[in-house]
Length: 208
Image (cartoon, rainbow, N blue to C red; front, side, top):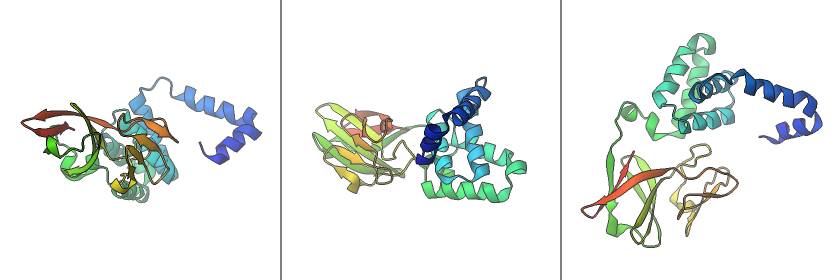
């Protein structure tokens, strides 16, 4: 929560907390994906940049697809108007989430050839680009982990210069991650996105 909300909770808990309870109770009969989509649309209506990014990230994490987000935006056109939809799409373009790129909207998941497994740094992290996606690869013996470069907070693409040994820190809000485990170690609680991976004929493949 923001400092302003924390202040209001501290100063006027009797007024603010019942409102939060109302919001929670109002959607208790909705499935999580529907709640997420409604939350995204309300942030577009209010044109709250930070809120839109956070609720969009949560929706995608909960299994809402990019096509479902786009459908919701277009179906809300009578209430939102074109200007607010364009505002939201401008943010989507800025975020450059691979799943929202036109060529990926209807693509089926598949295995992607990342590199020769011998190119992976033993006991360390290797940065790679594969099919328009940036990846961090950790290798220790036979154990290999392939992570999306995007921070689970607001889908910020974490650059390779943000890597210090096994520590990766998102430059936007300083969420830090241990790449050997993917766990968030500072300022957040969600881990890096881990892709299924395998080694075949000396090549490292990942599935997305």
